[in-house]
Image (cartoon, rainbow, N blue to C red):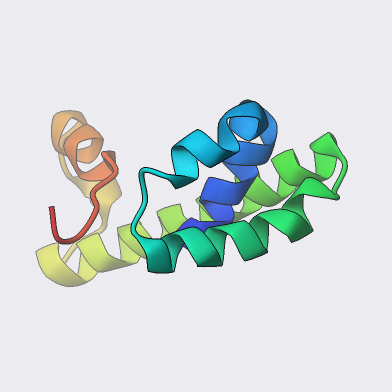
Amino acid sequence: MKSVEVFCCALALKGASRKSELLGLLPENERTAIDNAFREVQELPENEIRLRWKRERLKDLVEQRGRVKSQLGRSVERVSPRLQAWLARPFREGI
């Protein structure tokens, strides 16, 4: 799931009443993509949204661990718990 879909799931579950306000904080190109994706997500039942969100977060976790392994040369499970926690923090490129 791309960040647009994750955002739409969170928006549908937690912030649909503030949709306009939250979208106003984003750049125009992201706003349009999210608005389009939100239309699809908002029609789903809440339990389906939660399952979708969980499934996609797990995919993201697997991807992150793969990137860590390729950069460190070993699995993230073999590094200290403190480093694992730091590596698991969400990062956004360009910030």
